[in-house]
Length: 475
Image (cartoon, helix red, strand yellow):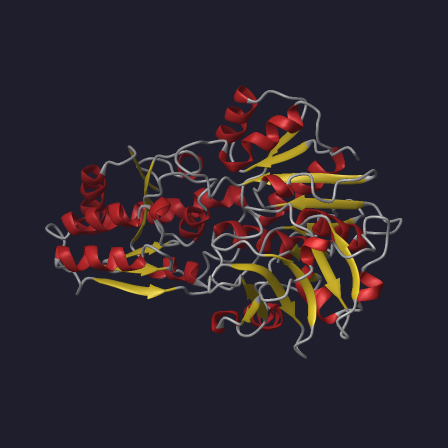
């Protein structure tokens, strides 16, 4: 149970693009923060803007699995406009009262419903036999159109946000429009947070369109810098350009939370500004280390999204080499993603298919660390590396590449695991072999792993957030 530390009285909104059942570390950390806030007596509304229709089922699933708690609400903008009172939702000066001409479908366009959309959308193709679509309509359960916008064939609304969005009642009559998706999102957040109550908006999505979203007089706005999905090794990630605008005073946003001191230092050095910064690392559940087994066999574990940035191939190669010293060892991989097929082919090419098992996505995969001898972590870059903390809490030593950011904040080289120079597959294999063949070493590192994770307690986490919110000025 989280500490009952009192957060400043306010309405707390967490904004993000989407949350799904096969979430990664960024979503997991946001959901955990929301749960801890709620357990400390502060309700949280998580606001999502994607067009996915699965949120009702997801809410039930996560409530049953304990991902959410009483006081945590997941809201979705498409769901509100799809099943809500469209006239009531479209109020205020930001709403356009005339239907944009660009949304009126000319004669000759052919409707097409893609089975992948589950018949929840209808797209209109150009005439002349072209299969490029120009318009997209979003449908209610009764098949009536509630929203129409210009299509982005091959891309998403994130890439071309400056498109008008029109809304229609069940009779097909135009009700109102916004000049862009971003204007629509901002209006919705403003409507949800309307009232006299102080509001704190914590944004977890690192997309330029979101950094100033919801900012208005009287609101305290916090941006969490995960940089989990940065391309390449740029530590500033995808928010660099927007941050530079903010630093020049062009945006109403002035507070950022980083997960590690090193990341914060890099940002402040490269993009100096008057923006308030704080470091709040992730937390772990206090009972995670209870009832740990005395022996863990020779089981190695990877818990990761399977894409190229996570570099799971390096872990597999190191494991393959270490098998020469410990042929009875085996590797369980939990997670899914676009690189899975390529990784399965690598395992097959190495001839270790009987030693490596791909389990796919598992909601409570972190629990697997409790019975593992060691965990492997070879990401190319990270914002923090939550799975490292999950493993240490459960007495599972971690062998990790020393990348920015995260591993060096949690791993004491030779104490609770090993920090390997980035890309050092040979050294990773050597350390792996040491842990697999030396029971005394494995036991020592396991015990130290548990004690090293204590500083990341939930109580300390909530207190850090309470202190930050107190310090955040209203815009």
